[in-house]
Image (cartoon, rainbow, N blue to C red):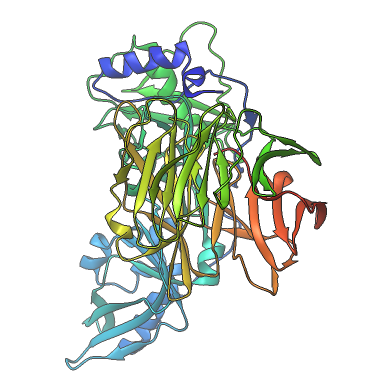
Length: 564
């Protein structure tokens, strides 16, 4: 279905209402029937039992620093045990949630030149900021933490320390849990997941709401919008959950209680984000102490909707474009023979009217539509498989870190270079635009080491791409050549072209992954709607993932791709 088909009358009304209160957006309520996917529900109560030890009488300065670092596992009561290691002055001003540093190896304090000063050198895996956004670090990343220790009533205590806690990878996995915040794309037709990591403590609901009111993660800013007007804050100190209902009381600047559309969308955004908690079944929204009016006949359904793709793939058979579905192959009507071209990496839009491929003979991106002749649009070194977005643009990256997009259709115009300064020193090996058009899934390679990134797509009001935001690194230092969307929250990634056995990974957008069964000699990968529609080419045969095995499908059709 086209973008316009998804932009329903209700969403359009919401947009008008949003403009009326200063340009804030909203979560869509209606639209076409997509595959519904309930968010992963997590516990509202901690599932671990960590009680770190407090400081011992007579402990040395080094023991105090070491004990303080170990007490970072005790998130209960606002890190009360860790604060026992601090002077009274620092205990009242220290902000442990400002940064969580996940490190490898031991955190050993080393004396500095001045007495009672210590330094801790950490090999860093990742860092979580105060809003729950995780930044994964490449191998070799380090960080230095400095501490000063003084005597208080005859006992050593820390007088200076960074606003941070340091956890090993296993402790982090035990204590922190990813949670999905929800925002809307700019034209209010789809919801977009924004993963955040919070300590598994009571009340995590408060962390979720505070982060939601703070807006999207930096990599999504300008690509998504929120229902909450700027300056909206949590009125109380917490978001209590009682008998399955989370009560959220807000202070909203210039709040208009009669604006039902905005009220509903604020409620939806909260409900989608909070109902991933097992303890939350309903959300009560109040502004300045009064329940928010949601209108007659309102039902709190708040579905999570994935933009899906058709089950038909495009592929190559003897150098020509064909459709493949359910073991059946058919030629693409209206497409002329591709004589003189050497097509690779075919792609198509959701309507299966426009197609693109890379001509390996010239290094050019070629577009072709039904009943139209192929057109060479531009050339580059190492162009990635083309990716269509729902605004009618086809994208590709290259080994020089350049990202370009060009319109399809009769009024295509010239290709444009999409601003992405963070790619200037990186080689792009895969680039896929999300099905809602808000994010780019990018794989870069440098000296044989790959990184997987997500970057928000910022557009002009008419959908023209403007830039890819500074990205969020989903995984670092991995062996990956291609990454493909499976839904709004998942993608599949794998290395291609090797001779050994490869186990593709299915990632969620928070960075967690699971491995699929292995295949020897993997050369191609495609992904439709979830893991039930993952295909791979290995040994000259197209395979389909069936449970825990790969089932051979075709030896004639190779290099397949779902729409997008």
